[in-house]
Amino acid sequence: MPLRRWTRGARLAYAMRNPLGGFARVPAAPAVALRDLWSGNAAGGEQLVRNQTLFEGTQRPLHEGEWDNPQWPEAYRRWLQGFTWLQDLRELGAESARIKARTLVAQWMEQTPAERPISAPSITGARLAAWLGCYEFFAASADDSFRQQLMASLIMEARSIMALMPEEAKGWHALTALKGLLAVAVSLPDYPEFLTRYLRLIDTAISQQILPDGGHITRCPEDLLQCVRELAEMLYILQVARVPLPTSVLDAANRSAPALRAMRHGDGGLALFNGSSEQNPQFIEQVLNRASRTRVVAAGLPDSGFARLNNGRALLIADAASAAPAGYDGSAHAGMLSFEFSSGRQRLIVNCGTSSLHVWADALRYPAAHSVLELADLSPMRFDADGGVSQKPQVTRQISVQDGVHCLSMTHDGYKPQGGGVYSRKIYLDKDGIVLQGIEKLEDVSIPVPLCIRFHLHPDVSIEQEEDGYLLHTPEETWFFWSDGHIEIEESVYLGQGKREATRQLVLTPATTEQTAEDPSPAAAHVHPAEETEQPQEADPPAEALTPEVPEVGSGLLTDPSAPHIGSTENTLLPPPPVPQAPSKPPIRWSLSLKSA
Image 1 (tube, rainbow, N blue to C red):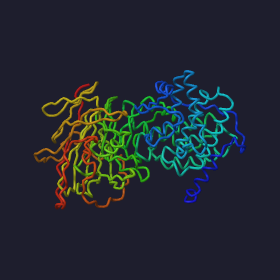
Image 2: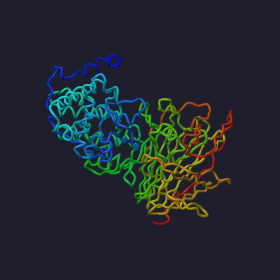
Image 3: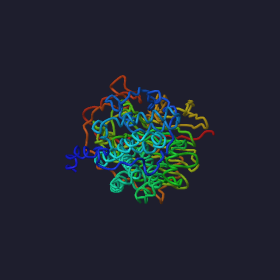
Image 4: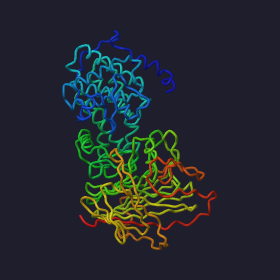
């Protein structure tokens, strides 16, 4: 591996030699006609014709020959250089769109090999697949000179992927790079080294990121979607070219498609965990139909660490594991034990989501942005400067079912090194899916610290106060929320669909009177340890004791007054010396029941 790092520049320079210089024969056209599988956005195509780009709601001018700018967000740079926007011009379909596509590709090819930004093989892979997938649209009718230059560029840039892989792309980005290499391999069969290298790398790329249950190693549902998408495109390319399907690709698609279905709510969008957004339900369905012919939904995701309870119209998805392994934890959120709950196509309880804006993305990683318990000024995870996680809690989970009643028991010790104790959450879903109940508890607490339990509501949910609780109105149903703790209504935000939406949250704090009952849950009275039980996930190594300190983001409040405000619990400095261990705090109980449909 060190030798490959030392020889990187030489390998890349050799790879980017121009085939038109006489090193090899350049074919006149692709041997196989590939077709891009996904529909584009005609409005985006119209913007491009007018020398504007529209990406994630932001409009930017499109300057001739400008393909890189350090001021651009990373996501925008990847999108622009990846040429997936050719789909938008193809969707527009006008002759002006065809000419614009050809012009922009020509501008890219006018750069010398040394000037082209090809250091990220995943972006190069996306670009090569986009060129070949839209070839009939923008290149088939072009002159011989353009097509010859395009074929030469395909060869050079495919060689750059070979020179940089596997070190410089991992996760689903590695699959994007290999997809581009595969597309060139089947389109230019006179260069067998491309297919040989693809077959040599694909098995490892899959085994490193797709878990036995089909989930993704990052534990981000959106990453899983991207992974399934790349697998679907690979299967299509292999089938069109009549190349025998590698067992690893077919098996990975058959495992990951059911796992992806398990991470969808009734509205078809994804659950919001570890940096995921909802994504477009129609696109998700398109990807799933391409990846697998079956419509199987994974019953459980033990390796991915997600629990799924489903009765009647009710669906609960819970984050029941610690952060992903080092190197794959850049999007990990401190949302252990948080859950989302939906009924039919309507989401009720949610997590706040994620954002492409750095300040928001950082704030949304903390417990205050999740439907879970939060201790003021403490974080159950410690995030490094590079975005990874250095303090990972131990998480346990156990799922049982008896007489149709689901019981999910989870714990994590993320607060324990700081004196906050072990957090325990037990959730029951009745057999008809009309009653959801929970018991929240802290044990082994050694310092006095304020706590609250947040339930972020979807923007479609409105709240009406009643004498003993709150009615939660959705367009189709009304649910009743009750707790033996104190309930406050606070403002919240929802970023599940790529834009910031105002919403509200229910915040529970311990009641002033001492609670004495051990288990008030009506559903709990009928639940006993089931014979069929999911075993707890193997716990991470114990975290070392940490000196109590106030992190930059505590209970949703940032020190920067212009930064996003998610929670509203006041920041309180912890007392320097820990007091002797206190008894466990009384549990807080809550229930959510269907009032009318």
